[in-house]
Length: 302
Ligand SMILES: Nc1ncnc2c1ncn2[C@@H]1O[C@H](COP(=O)(O)OP(=O)(O)OP(=O)(O)O)[C@@H](O)[C@H]1O
Ligand SMILES: Cc1ncsc1CCO
Image (cartoon, rainbow, N blue to C red; front, side, top):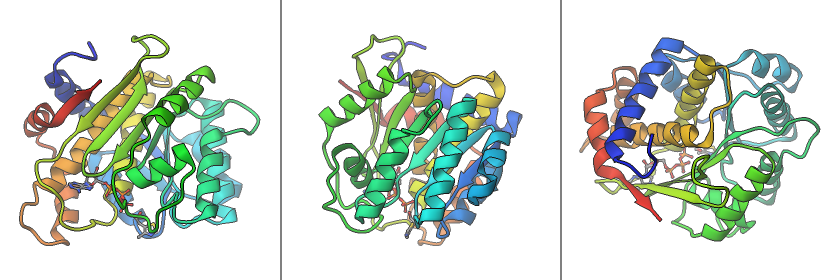
């Protein structure tokens, strides 16, 4: 696919990606958080994936090792959970299983900040993990810059960190790690170094929203991470390989667009309505509508 080409190609690619999950029925290991675990498991099952939520450090090698993909969500960190995350990511790295890391509330405490940074750095023995760093704007800002001027797990604004983001991705590339950054918020943003565009060429795409959200819908970001985990797992199961950054970017765009489109489609429904509508959209996606949505909302940022 020509990266700077038509966004309709992306729309088609995204539709195919969701069909691939139904065909492959991948096993996805998720280290979840207790607020959104059940919603994330439902979201993955609705797409046709097989979720497995587990976080005993003692079983991580076996559980991650048997899965097609891994999604790590740092909500409610503790020493035991941290150890589980580390072992799961280490196993994923060594076996070439793609992972998503969601550093929930990275700026809400010094402990979360440190845990997020060291899981990203992966400076333990063996091959470091590859995949997607996904968070809201506050979380990504903390991970990239070390700033902790935030509170809570919801995003408190839109932050800028273009230079730090580029430096992070170049560092990952130097270390042979295929990494993409997905930053959610009022505008969702995707950033990666393309395999085809030269070592230093950073690609950025933005996904605008037609409707501004009035409330903090708890769990939308976590579900985006779970959906992305399922897409990466299906890709890995199908190809037997670690996806390249261009492919990861397309899958990240698919996850974020599916969730945001479904949330917008609720219209004037109440808070509770959105959860079951999102699950319905994931289980019976209208791929034509979905492709059109991408066409309208995706923009290249150079
Ligand atoms: N201001 C906004 N207007 C429209 N849509 C939004 C807005 N903020 C977020 N969203 C939508 O919600 C999705 C999740 O983003 P958000 O930044 O709220 O995640 P999060 O804070 O990680 O969520 P959680 O931790 O509750 O799971 C985004 O991908 C986007 O579709
Ligand atoms: C509300 C909340 N607190 C910790 S994790 C979480 C769910 C959204 O990330």
